[in-house]
Image 1 (cartoon, helix red, strand yellow):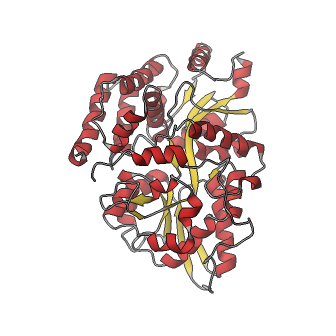
Image 2: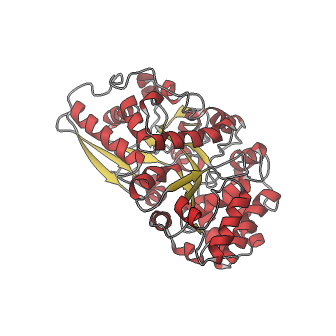
Image 3: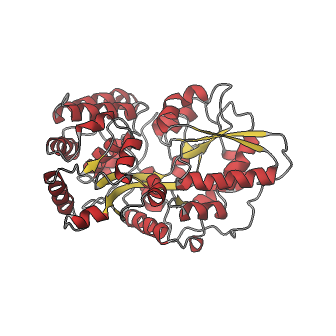
Length: 440
């Protein structure tokens, strides 16, 4: 990889998913050009993703599968995997005879960018031209779909298609807050007062996972709350060296250590998965969970015993988020043309509106088709971030191995194996081992 310009982050943060204004010119019942042409009876398309069946994406993509099978005559072999499993195996899987024909995959330099650079996923420039996907994505969101020859996002060729957006925010149990006489968490003082009150009452305030992504994203949000856009550019795009003892990283690491010591975060999180953490919140066992919009549809369907509250992390301009994960076509796909037809169906206004109604963030919907109040609440929350130029990508994007590196350090911080200073030094070592080789 080479040094990237600052344009990519700025473009995404300013332009991606402005849902109040984003719409498709196609009506909700107009088929997209090219989709479903021809009879593919007897053919099978293998589709892989890692979304829950009841998630917004799972619901919408199941509908896309129905449309695909109805219009093409082909059959879909749906293979649902785990995010972590695919993240670890994609380079080998996509270049093997077991490769799916089309798969959801993690976007960013260290993931999709790396696979694009080594030729494991297919160039989609011709498909973008045929189906007009760039026009549907709107300004900025194509940043995470494009990679240059070194695998750096934001320029070069198209290698993936995002059809939803995502960001990270605070879920809270409104009933637990009300019963404790606490205000909804609108400021950091509110968050800390609630954490202190719940801990004093024997209730762990936050659930999270240090084994998987949630705690790393919380660490990043805490750093972002002390950061500006130039720090994000340095961290994500290697524009300047990152000061790993500076105010941003130090605040994040020291705050998490303090929260563990104060009982705001349980030491049990070292062995918990993201699913474990989400279920603790859904089951009403804890009052706060900082995680992504990909949980929202499931929260709406699975929470039946309390009122769900959502709010952006307070007192910050910047927050983790981007366009969603992307559809990619592995180099060993046996049905690349059918894969493009399927991807195109997921971009139809009908499917996009269903994604929005189910609690997701569509990228090509007619927003007039989304009437659900809960969906509108999520869109409004996202637009708060977008309006302040807040989207700042994710903490694991800078290097191909930083996802596991960050999780390991978070576990060590919780276990007491690392002091905050030692944790920062570990992260700096992992980060610089890679970034120092690619920074100009």
